[in-house]
Image (cartoon, rainbow over all chains, first blue to last red; front, side, top):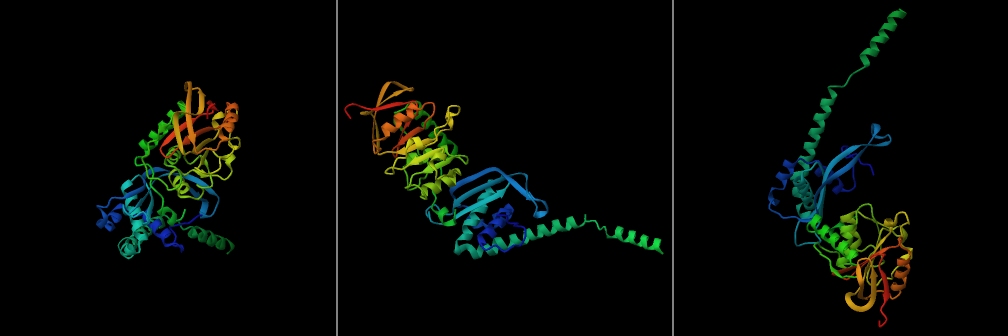
Length: 167
Length: 205
């Protein structure tokens, strides 16, 4: 299903929302939030692996689907603890080839599923992350705005010319 | 796949490349020496259902383009989820569509003639059938095998396999170049039976 995750659509599943955030989290923010879990040795279900994914787009956001191009994606899946097989599994898909970043994102996903850690990570990671992504988006929007052309002036001038002709 | 199911999935090969290559090499050896039991190198966590040797063979042979048929014991088991997670294979219900067939110990053996036989032009498009057995012992009367890869003849005793297998195999052998290849497994060992192998019950058995 198509989810424009840049828009603030209400998803019913909170995990879906935080995984969208984690997949775009810069490494320094993940490093900071997970600084107490740095020594932890992951129990891998799927080691970080890098591959290609086809990105599809739609003209104007709603037209026919077309293949935009391939992107490099790194994914992994892990358990947070060696002993507990029934503990939550953290999964991550991140853009690029940074295996460490994928590992951190998966760790954060696993810890967020644990009610014990959710509060802390929501405060320390998800909130700043939301702000960061909003700031990035706002900056990009602003930059795009400076290139916007207003054609109204041309239209008005033409109209005025017409009026003068009539007069 | 739900979050809950994911929690119970075992990890794959400890070292993906080396683990799967070692198993692949063993399968090649088994098919070039039909009837010779070989130890399967198992270097991974395993699902509860299904024999370890059969599971790792599939783990190394399957990928996202292959279609797998599972016998009733294995359908919807942790073995199915484990293979789907690690290999991305497609599970099919119709046995005639499958590239690989996994028959668990105790499940009815599907008719070999119902599997993909390949065509005369493309005999490689046939199915490979992995059948679990109780024991596989070489040099004990049971079956007499001969054909490519076997000097003179080889004896093999198989327990835990339906008795009508011999007859089904003879039909399969007769349809060469079409036909399926079979891998017989115990929890630790593997015997390859390529379609070129001639098989008959030993007189005293």
